[in-house]
Length: 160
Image 1 (cartoon, rainbow, N blue to C red):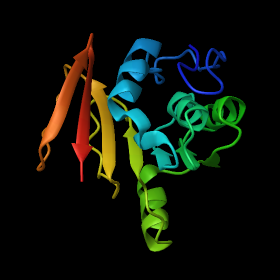
Image 2: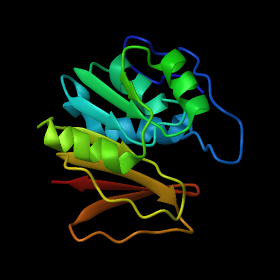
Image 3: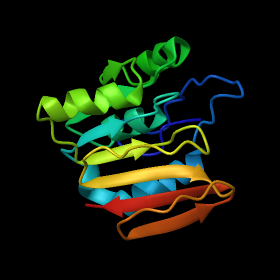
Image 4: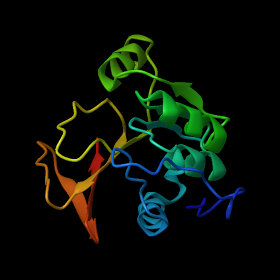
């Protein structure tokens, strides 16, 4: 696993190798960032179920203004600190973090959400939400979405 683009392009990323962590492949991340394009530059980005911090690291590398990474597991947070040291890192359940960000009036431009497959997540307020799940666990949303499939991964792009 590595950073695909930006100033840290090619940097190797660490990740946890266990059944609870499914790092998004380089190919899927590359396709996601190709769709997002220059929207990442100067953006405030939330990587909600950060795992390895790959989305956070990629966003930093591509010029995001601020990156917030979150994972509930201590071992994931330790890896995120290595892969995305410039991110604001939290170790919380996702709901309190979303509530904290909303109460603080923090605007999120882009939110990456890659929860455990099959878990339905309350969406944070963000201009663009990129939600990844497995094709065996499709999700329906109230608003129109762009859906892309990459192997087993389904990626939903929700524009608010």
